[in-house]
Image 1 (cartoon, rainbow, N blue to C red):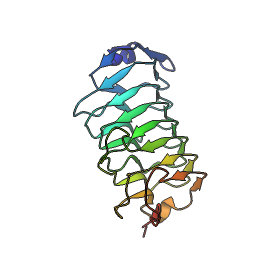
Image 2: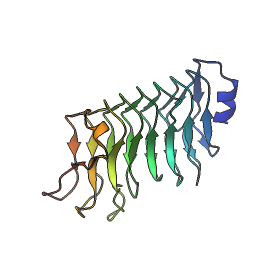
Image 3: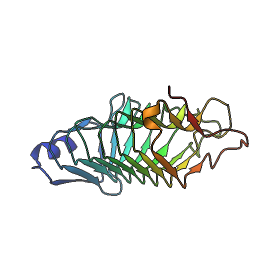
Length: 212
């Protein structure tokens, strides 16, 4: 299992994941352990979250991550400088939840249907969210919209750059691509994002600041 590989790994080692289907949730508690899948490496944890990064400089990359639990990847507040990159994610309430400072969420492809929200940054400063693609299912003609693409709360200094964010196929008036919940999160930057690229609306305001 992936968890067995993590247990056997020393700090700063890479755990290579073979092209198989895995069902056991994975928790990473050692500094610098990096999980890397090859094409076809899939984890489906059903009602559980798939990965929990609970140590600094840990990573999950190149995995197909699916399930119906709370989150595909949880980066806890003990996991500063974590990386979640080049994964495909679908089915969870939240694709990636980030609480670790100086972490990176890069080049992931996320099917957003029904997520609430897709990416949730809470209490995490100086996070980089870049080159991700957040879009509805192409196979479903009427997918359930996500509540929001990226939500920031108590997360200053975040860079959101070069992402494609489409939380639904049609404008229902209840979604936002980027939602900022407090003043502490207002000093980040959003650059060159393609917001709501695949939607059919023309009047939706994609960035919402509702902090007090």
